[in-house]
Image 1: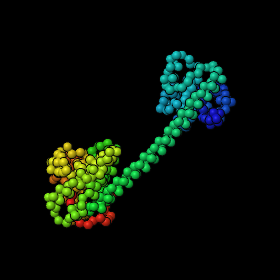
Image 2: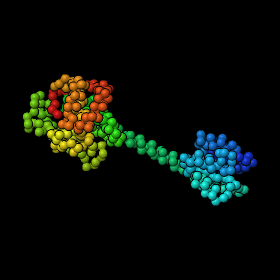
Image 3: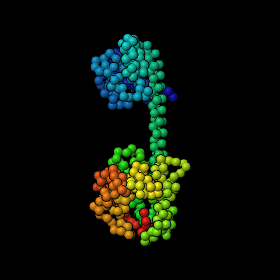
Image 4: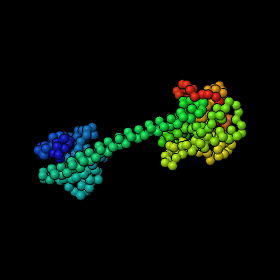
Length: 363
């Protein structure tokens, strides 16, 4: 099995003395190595090493530039466990040995050569090289499998999120496009703020579930055509807490934790007049503050049975007027710099249908 592996290994020899080069090349081929690349020109040999895969290098040190030390420096970025280097040289001082090993050589043999010893060292280093390559290939295969599984889980998460978003749409007058735009616009804002990419992606996935708690509100209140009574408004406001209770689970995950946080906080107001907890300022989680802005802006720019679409100018003025009252003033500044991108989302993710509209819904 070893000889089969050695027969496909590529061994490179660089030595400027042609007699030495012929001796090494013929000895390696006698040993059973079929792929031996021999170079008397060190520059040519280095160029070949940098452009091709190889399994073992036998390298002389005392050569015209680039010498062996120069070549070791040029190859320093490579993985020496998968492509070891044996120095084969007449230079035998302690400093030269140490320098060669410090530059990444795996072994050091001095001339004149003991060919049986050299071939044993070649065999041992090739065993290490081929075993390391096999291990690396197995690791890459496992990483590919993990990545594929991660993508499957990610797709499953997204499917569940879309299902929850659609479920809330059945109790609401909002389309699935509006709900998904909230995720896209929230991610857009978080990106502009320089947030961590992983958190941005989680926000994009979690934000569409912000109103899932409306599933728990009676139709008589949710679809009432007129103004709500004080008691009805109290019940209606409870959808934020219901959403939290739906999404918050003992088997916690960062995504569902964030979605629960958004559900319970996106109706809080910067001045403390919101619900359900009357949080004020930065007491409100950042995720909730972002989604509150995105939800209001998108709702203003979307048609509803009880209102016409507001113009971009009117909607943007409303957002600016809400700074410091309804909305975090710093986040309003961020959104003001993104109005063009938000309008592009309105076009690219336009409402295609309104299958669940029945009557006005009270936020």
